[in-house]
Image (cartoon, rainbow, N blue to C red; front, side, top):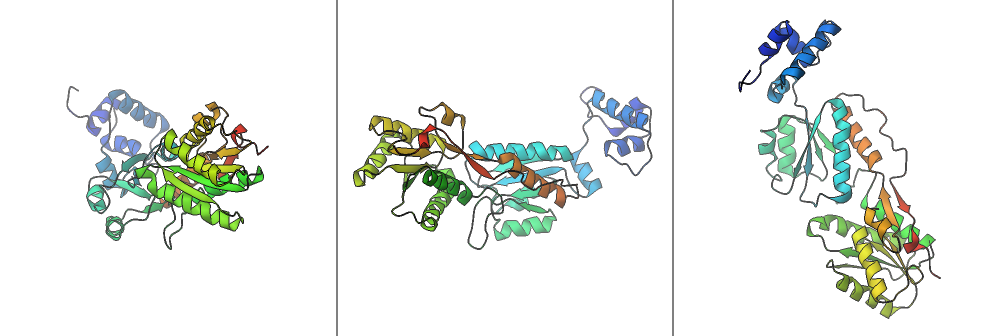
Amino acid sequence: MGSTALTVSDVAKEAGVSRATVSYVLNGRRDVRVSEPTRQRVMDTARRMGYVGSPAARALRSGRGDVVLLLIPDWEVSGQLELLLEEIGRLVAAYELVCLRYEGEHWQGSLHKLLSRISCACVVTFDPLSPDDAHALESAGVPEVSARLLDHPGIPHNTTIGQDTIVAAQVDHLLEQGYTRLAYLVTEEPRGRAFTTARIRAFHDICTARGVKGAVSTTISSSVDGISKTVQAWFTNSDEPLGIAAWNDLAALGIISAAAALKIAVPQRLGVVGGDNSPVAALARPPISSVKFNLTSEAQQIAARIAGILGHDPGNGTPAHAAVEVIFRLSSAGPA
């Protein structure tokens, strides 16, 4: 066929059927009688010829597109968040939908421009939209699936895994292991500030609820020197064993390294629990206890909401396992 784009007519001619039959088959029409051998022949022919239908044309016929637009605010997309987005994409593919991630701050306030270029089946939001963007979504008639990961005044998170859920697992683990003096340490991540701020706030709220006195927290630059000075200061104030909940496993590794330089025994005098159960946690010496996220279950619930709002069978979106769990390792084995 050269460089000319293939058409339905080309596929119909090659398969020896009408254009209408090709259209019915390629658009999944089951309300029109087409024999299975003919249906298979059309599919095989289209695949062999490399025919790709027009998304815009499909959207006009069906009344909606086949793109699930994941709208990501100006967050650092890595670690657990990236894994969650990948799992959502894998699950919605079962409904013959395509996930498109749109990241950063440039779309905020200009969602109408984005919607004018993409034929969306629905939009998944991870943070509340501005009034202008909410109006653009409503005007376009595109349904919204909310998967809020953070709490906002009057608008709590609606995912199973919340920032308070993660911190509560860390605090309860350290208390169960016998650490009664607690701290929370965050290494600076400008594009992760919304999450680190939420974790620190949750830490103090949870410590107050658990009756923990004198809980402290800090946000510092990501350097072993800065972490060492902080840990040293915490031990200058008291020689009582200290349990530190770290923002993530890299911060926990920094704490372990600082403790070694300061000759502070882990876990006898210092207990550490990380925040995302990354491979580094198991490779550290001593190995670092950390919080494992049940991302599969979280993604299943979000995918079920997408399926439900688009008229598909959502299946069972009920979580079968705990949202988070602490993977116990030597770093938090308890004071001597």
